[in-house]
Image (cartoon, rainbow, N blue to C red; front, side):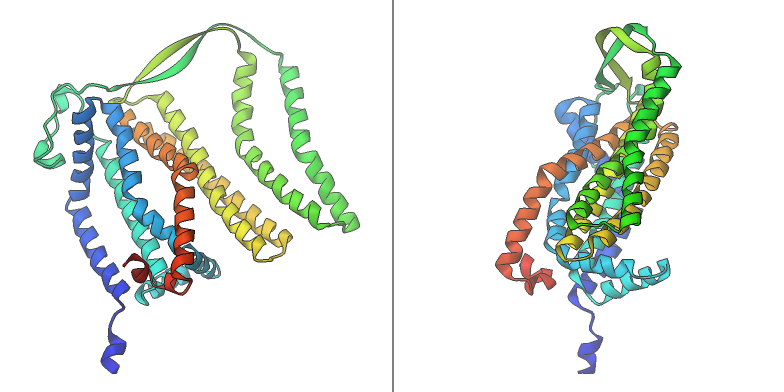
Length: 381
C-alpha cells in the first residue's frame, strides 16, 4: 500500500520524460535545425524566401492544433486553476502551486505547461534562425549545421528576398492650421472623457446603478479601453497627416530587402506587436469577464477587475512594442517578417480555427461527460 502511494501519476511521469527530451532536443540544436529544414524545404517548393518565411508561421500554427484542441477540452479545469493561481500573493507561491499541480498529475495544468514550453522553444528557435544572413553568395548556409541531409541545398543567391507591399506616393499635399488641429483634438478628448466623468458624478451623487446601465457601462468601458490604447498613436500620426494631407497620390509597389535591416519594417513590426498584445490580452480578459458574469458575480466588481487587467495589458503592450522596435532595429528584416507572420496567423486563427476547436471541444465534453475531462488520457484514448 505504501509503495502505491509513492508512485508518480502517469501524467507526471509523462511530463518529466517530455521535459528531458525537449531539453535535449533544444540544447543540442535540433529544434534550430528543424526550423532551418522547414524553411529550406518550403523554399525548395516555392523558390521564394519571403513566401517560405510566411509559410513557416502557417505550418507551426497547424502543427500546434492538437495541443490547442486539448487546451480547449480542458479549459473549464484550467480556468479554475488560473483563478486559484491569481489568488496567490507572490510569484513564489504561484510557482509552488504550479509545481504542486504538475507533480500531482493534473492533466489540464500539464497540458498547459507542455504547450507553453513548446511554444517558447518554437519561437526562440524560429527567431534565432531568422537572425541569420544566408541569402547571398557571401553568406552561404552550412548544410550540416542548419538543416537535415534530406533537404535540397539551395542555389545561390536565394530568390524572393525583396518583400513587396503596396504603398502610395504623395505627389502634392496641403496643411491644416495648428489651431484647428488642436481644436479637433480637444473635441475628441471631450467626447471620450466628459461623459465618463459625468456618469461617475451622477452615480456617486445619486447612487443610481440600475442593472441595465451597469451592463451598458461595461460595454462602453471596453470601447473606451480600445480608444485609450490607440489614441496616443493616433494623436502623433494625425499631427503629421493633418499637416501633410495628400491631395494627389499615386499607387506604387515598394520592396523591402529581408536580408537587411529596414527602419520602416521595424516600425510596422512594433505597431503590429502592440496591436497583437492588446488583442490577445483583451480577448482573454473578455472571456474571463463573460464567464464571471454568467456565474452571477457582481457586474461592478467584474468590471473593476477587468479594467485593472486591461490597464496592465496596455502597459505591457507599450513595453513589448517598444522593445520589439529596438530589437528588430538590430536585425535583418526577415526577422520582422517572421514576427508579423506569426502575429497575423494567430489573430486570423482566432476568427477561423479557434471557433471550430471550441465547438468540437464542447461537443467532446458533452459526449464523454464532465467527470472524464478530469482525466485527459481517457478522452484521448
